[in-house]
Length: 58
Length: 449
Image 1: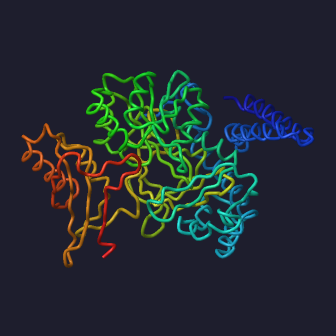
Image 2: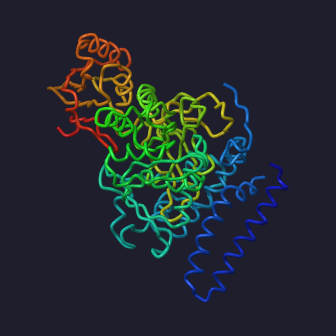
């Protein structure tokens, strides 16, 4: 896979992460939002492991 | 053997699974530095361990520096646990509120060790298993049956979640007994299964003898993933399972404190790939501690889970004995291979009558002989100053007529493959203990006087 495509993916991973973090900020403590956003962030971490971390060495 | 990269759909993650070795080392070093810093900043246990060794995380600059980091042994984890933050003690690197999963080790080598995981760690566990199941051919067309007791042992829990992640349909066969599990596999036409080798063979036995079902003909399971015992990497045991089920049997290796770190792929290269994307694995000479890079020299596995955060696993002394393979795998993965899987435990590999032996070598012989049942037991005792080794076996009822020939074959093969003479005890069929999970077939009574 080309580095350009990897970088495009990384941009989107960062966007998902930012959106999930913002959801938690906006939730006002609504658990249904906080906990589901936390689960999204755990999945985002797997995307980072599989994609973003590779870019650190490219 | 040659290595040729396959199409992207062949791998769970084609980028890391085919990464050139120098890039892999760089990736591992980056991640290793991060996890050491993480543990140093958050865990009193790790900070004290490193400070006593005169090590700061910033001292790790090259791949070779990894070996400067002190190892952690299971006994050390036992010592710090059952204290605050209860029950994990001060290796815990996250607030207790972030721990969502509890599991514990099986306790086969002593007091169980507790393992806390965050939800992110649990996702990571499933990710480890997704790499291995995908490499073993699991796809979203599979109906996967899990015949294990969903309980406090990690066992196949992550296999369940990984199969879901891949898109398989997962059937949890938790509280059903063996017969009910077999009937459910038949009813649902399950295509894959995960179990210990002992249980895979035991299920086939039960299916035939109690239900009149021949798994090879009457069931549709065509791939089986094993764990918990080395059997699926022992050729004769693997062959027995494959013939009994008419299925491909794949091995995997992991541990509660570590994660699922090695797997056999569909190319079955005679060993297990180490998942180098998620683990930094070193092989150490058992006597000198020297790092072994060359193939075909045995050492013990010292391993780091690079992304596990609640209770990090950094340079964990697994006691698993293995050797690197010199051959690349035709599957195209650059992940290194441990030849023949884990060949034993440093604790179990022992000198008997002056000969260094792993119990798996005896299993390989017993399971290779037709006419013997799947069960056996090895008992080592001391008679005066001399070691005495007994091998308890069972003859299959239909093999009684060939008793003498079978026993002679067994003795010859044992002498040839292990350089030892044994007291062979033939026990009535079905009288040796049967196991559902981890079998205890090796008893060294010399250590207990």
